[in-house]
Image (cartoon, rainbow, N blue to C red; front, side, top):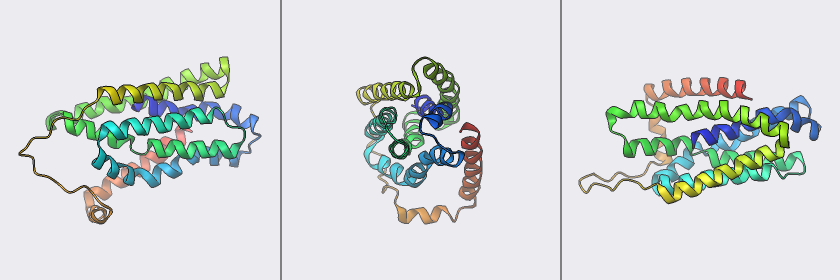
Length: 216
């Protein structure tokens, strides 16, 4: 999932010069295009993972990847830049719970002493997606054009979503496990009183800015 997610994110950076020429975009307009994915992604990170806690990784993982892959397919069919921006916002909606799904699966299946190693393996998918998606995207654009690149990546995501729905199951709950109320917006304010959480937040925001700046 992480490979596909970051491959789809990298698709725009490699396609942007060709796309910019087709739609006659100025540098400022290309900046809007590059950032549009993050508008909905940022706003829906917390709400989408709260929904994930209620509905589970099987359903939300399948729906999320299906939605963002559908957005990639639509991105290859657009006729103007306004339509393309809408597909990028839709991509952000689909990708918002990505890390939550991964963390949920690790929490459900890995022992506490294994979670650091398992999470590291999982996160290598990001780098594989960026590297492989950029190289594959360049070849696809060179051979078939940027529209085909977007549509091909969309099809790959839809196939993955179908397999995930068919294969993945959450572990059986133990009867002795105490029930916890799902996380809510009311509880979120307590997070911001934690120095540890604020430290993680500052580091995450800083590295995300640099990550997306370089990637796009």
